[in-house]
Length: 109
Length: 114
Image 1: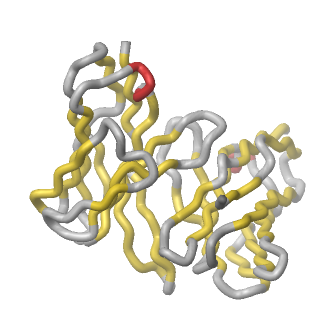
Image 2 (image 1 turned 90 degrees about the vertical axis):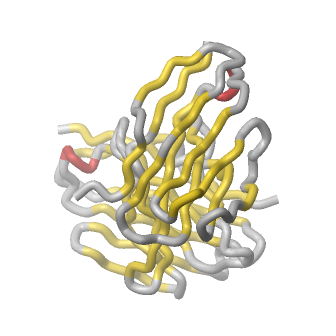
Image 3 (image 1 turned 90 degrees about the horizontal axis):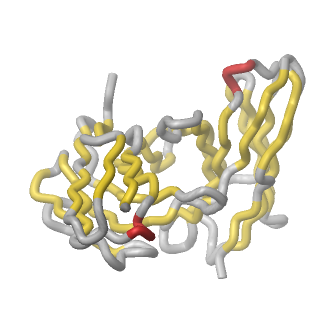
């Protein structure tokens, strides 16, 4: 079956760096997405990786290794507003999105 | 700047009632989706539509139907609500951003079935 694994919850300190991992096993691969979802709000798009390597976008970076079925989202200079759930999703060979359960990130002062 | 609007944020219905969840997008997207989101689970696709009057079943279509009479509007219908349909329902449309087919979600409709 198809599966996306990411940690359920992580805690980090304001100003620090945190890495949220995502591993996947899917039928084919057509890209990996990261979305951010604040409590009670809609998920919003953060990043997209389809080739191996690091994509940097301001304080957020996303890395992909297709051979390892692995991605991570790196958040630098953490701010309180980064407290949210982070959703990893992979597009499979049928261009359907397979979603992880999300990682709840708690930022402490 | 609202792009995907869901008509109801919170609904409470009784078992057996018919429930309509409305979704409207203003981005002229062709593809629209209905997901449900439950604690500890990834988003699960109920139905999607890639054109007016077209619909495709997702992973969990049982107990649901959809309607897409206009490009901007995609409705989710629960013909006879059951307690196991208590959930957060998310509507989304998809469009291209920097080469990626990106979903834009509505704020969600939290449905409680008693």
